[in-house]
Image 1 (cartoon, rainbow, N blue to C red):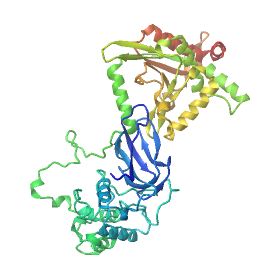
Image 2 (tube, helix red, strand yellow):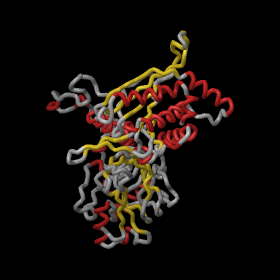
Image 3 (cartoon, rainbow, N blue to C red):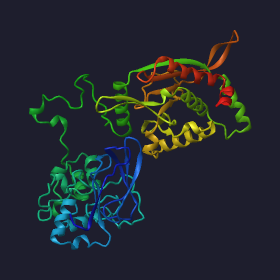
Image 4 (cartoon, rainbow, N blue to C red):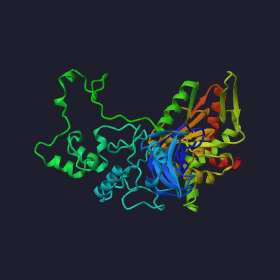
Length: 482
C-alpha cells in the first residue's frame, strides 16, 4: 500500500467485543476529514457509538456497507494523507496500490465518473469509488443525506465497468457492474426491467437512465423472468419461500445481531450454567404510595419515583445479604470461587427500540432515593437513545426488573449473567387484604427473586426478599434506619 494511504482498523469498542454492526457512514469517499471527526455509527452488542478518525486526509475507501457486521481489527476506512498527490497523478506503483484499496484510475473510469456526475445531478448523494459526491464534499459534512450509501462492494471490489488495464487481478462482477447509479438500478427494479437485457449507451457500455427509460417505454420491454417461465428442469423444485416443516409461506427472516444477539447469548448462557431457584411474595405497597403522595405535595417536581425507593431498599438489603451481590466463577483448571464486591452496581432493565438492555447505577449503595431516581432517568434516556456506554451497560452486580410497567403481576425471570440474582416487581393493583383482622382494599404488588442456588440457600434468598417487602410495607421506618 502507498505510504500516503492510512488504513484505520475497527478498534475494540469496549469490554473485549469482537464485532460491531455498521449502522451508518458519516463520511463518503472523497470527503476531507479531520482528526477525531466521527466517521461512522456502529452498534455493538451493548451500545451504539460514533467512531472517530485518528487520521486527517481524504477518504479513499469505506470498508463495508450499512447493515454489515465488521470484525474488530479489520479495516474500517482508508484515508489518503493530507497533502498527498492527486489520485490521477500517481505513479504506476501507486496505481497498483489504489487497485488493492478500491481506488481505480483510468481515462475510461474518469469518463464514467463524469457521466455519473452528470446523470445524478439531481443529488442522490451516492458515490463512485475514488470520486467525491457531485459538487464536492467538505470537512464540515458529518452525515450523508438520508438513504445515501457508498457504492462499495462488500469484498472491497470495484462496482464499475470492465476496465482491463486498470483493474488487472481484480474480480469484475457480471452485467450489473455496468450500472453505477443506484437510482438507475432502483428504476429498473421498480418497473421489472432486467438489466441483463439492456445494452448501455454510456462509456464502456455503462447503462444510463435513458436506457432504462427506453426499455420501460418499449412495448416489448425485457422484463425480469416470471416464476411461471422458470425452466422445466426446476418445475419440481420446492418453493424457497415455503417453510419445509409447516408448509407455510415465510413472511420474513430477521438476522439476530446487535442487542438481540447479545441478549440471546446471555440468556442462553444463564439458563445453561446457573441452577436458579425462585421465591416470591405479595406485598402491601399502600404505605409507600401514600408516603410518596405526601412528598409530592411539598416537592412536586423533585419527588423520586417508586422504582427509586425500591432501589434504595434493595441496596440496603444487599448490604445485609451480600451473597446475592456476588459472581460465581470457574477457572480454566476447573476450580471455582465466589467473588464478592465492596460496593453495589445496581442494574435495572430498560426496554428500548433496540431491545432490552440493563444499564447499571455504579456505587448505588452510596446514593439516596433522590440520587438514584436521577441516575435511573439519565441512564434510561441514554439507553433509549443508544448512547449508553459499554461500561454503563455491562458493570452491574445485581439487577432490578420492573416488569409491572407491562401490566403483568409476576415473571420467572432469567438471571442477568454473570450476576447471581434478579428482583422483579409486578404491577401495583387494588386487591382485598386483611388489615388488623379486617378486610380492606389495598395497593398490592408481587416481588419475585430469582437466585443462583450455588451461592446461597433459600434461607438467604427469603431473608433478602422479606427485608425488601417489609421496607415497602413500612417505608418510613426503613428509610429512617438506612
